[in-house]
Image 1 (cartoon, rainbow, N blue to C red):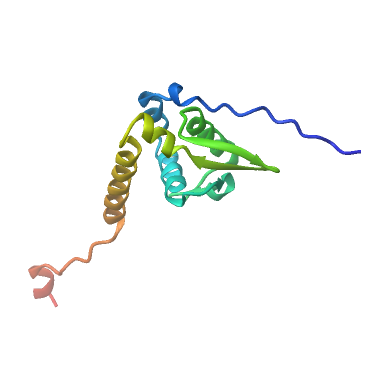
Image 2: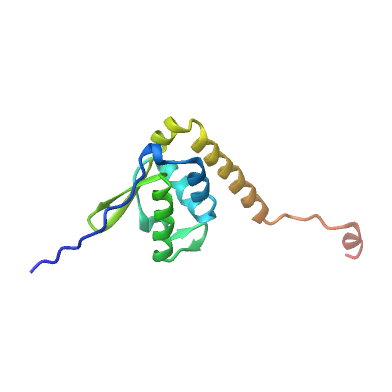
Amino acid sequence: MTTLMLMRPLFHPSIEGITVEGILHALSDPVRVAIYTDIVAQQCSQNCSTFLTVSDKTIPKSTLSQHFRALREAGLIRGEWHGVEMHNTSRCAEIEQRFPGLIRAIVNAHAIQSAGEARAKKPVARRPTKRAAANK
């Protein structure tokens, strides 16, 4: 006897239903913006489990599902089941037609911010002070 697993259909808003406010709200979370910029950069569908670690943080599957739902309901991604795996693709081309330059600006701003954060975490080599050098 085989068991069929019935899954609820996923909600994807029409392009007319996508709003700037919805996009900005969905991308206001650091984990979601990191996930989304990675999906945009890959330019191919990404399996949800690819993102179990985001920005060196382990993300529980239940939390990850909520992040993907927020991105999907904002109209930023399209999710499709491939067997038991959910694959997500960016809707950049559609959003570009509705809001030209918006996604590119957000992705570029996130890259600048991430680079700044990476520099801030990098240890700075300090030169010895004159007092420390004199004590040697």
